[in-house]
Length: 338
Ligand code: AHM
Ligand code: MG
Image (cartoon, rainbow, N blue to C red; front, side, top):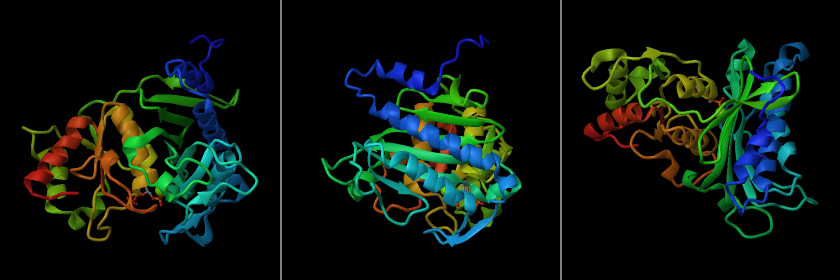
């Protein structure tokens, strides 16, 4: 590797803009704002053990789950990185019940941004990988402050989406619809540099990832599909290895690169699944599809679902195209729909 030449995130996105003659540079700057927030969140996570900011903030988020201190911090960092730039008209976050307006005194911009500032936060206390997930839409309202209509858009209108994984290194993976690109933070220069250009995911992979402790709470179809992943249906699908961290970004990222399928199906405890459509499933579905994979709620394409509420949940089957199709074929044969 020539250490005198690196492609930074900024340069890469600027280069891509040349292919869009109508581009104004606003989206580039917005992605750069997200990257800055990611660096700040990553820095806090690295120092978490030292600063005694591990553990619960004794507040409960809108889904009734205990927030970890870093969730709160990451949420504030994301909002503060985005709310004053004139590029964003409104935001929505896993950690805020309502739409997040732009503060008084700042002008609302062209984009709506949705995010889960720190997903998988139950992993923080054990030093396992966590992530930030985001998606960006062009606003549908024409002026003034953004409204719910700007954030309740179907995933097929996303203009860019991605995630940041805080793992053994900090990595940002994003797509503007043309390919999926991965950037690793070089801590010595404080820049995200292109490390994974044009990621393509295998159509059938070697891993399956699901919380198997829910097995007896799943539908018959999901149980059958997972038994296929165990190797019980070799004429239709090859048996796979099980890998599950319980951190969507890390589980998804491994399968994106190594090949595989991730599922969080509905179960009797979570009848609509656990994951949230808007800021967990849609951004991951956008990335999966741009890498050649698929994402469904079991039978229907995630990106075509029309959201009705900010925090709605949806079952998720995501990964290699033929692995996702395998699950769909079983559910359809059993007449189980999403
Ligand atoms: P969170 O948004 O409260 O962090 O929960 C989301 C996480 C995902 O990262 C992960 O895929 C899933 O919840 C794990 O759930 P479970 O512990 O039920 O397997
Ligand atoms: Mg989450």
